Image (tube, rainbow, N blue to C red; front, side, top):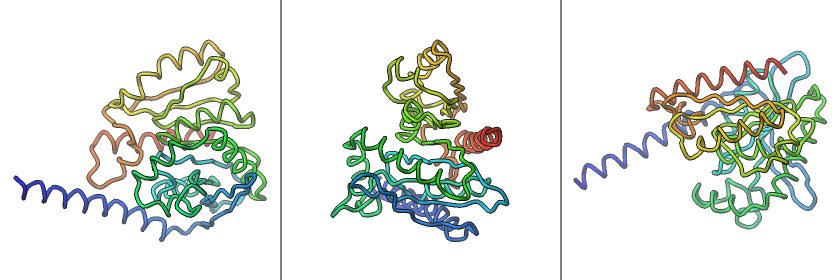
Length: 265
């Protein structure tokens, strides 16, 4: 039994390593321009991963908010895929300055530790950081002045919350995330909100019907789509070579819907 468990652990670690290698390989081989931007926000510096599309005309910007793991290679790869589709993507590390010796996500020893640090963030600081990053990307010469926001897991909830604050957003894309809100907060939303949810994610999905009713009552656009059989985090899990079929289908369908919605902006 111990040998079986040991073998399963080794297999699991090998699979995780393989998935991480694929993500890193994609980033390293990308033909698109990647850069790190240091965005000032008061006394803080927010480190951001920025990717530019290879297009003729100015492009719409997507502000990508990471999961509760911080700014990982996977989130950076999402930014690269958005640029591949023709959009400027900027992914801020909201753990900037919160790591050891004032470091960022990559300086924190594990994803578990990063998650612990993230849940101690001051919501006002998160909003101020996102505002500073949004202002930065809109000022880029190659940006067409259109701004959207997207987030995953914790970042999904933050993208919904940011829509209650930022008036110039053209759309908010919420991937399996929600946030505690009031009717007054929802009434402040000025853009359509599009939800992407896994069918096997009751923890998140339980709040979606009430939110939909509240958004409708407030006269706001909220269009949630649930992907049957997919679990929480299916956009990440669906990329893995050993992905469940439902996660893979959800991830592919989610990307197609996301790109279709972005084309309409």
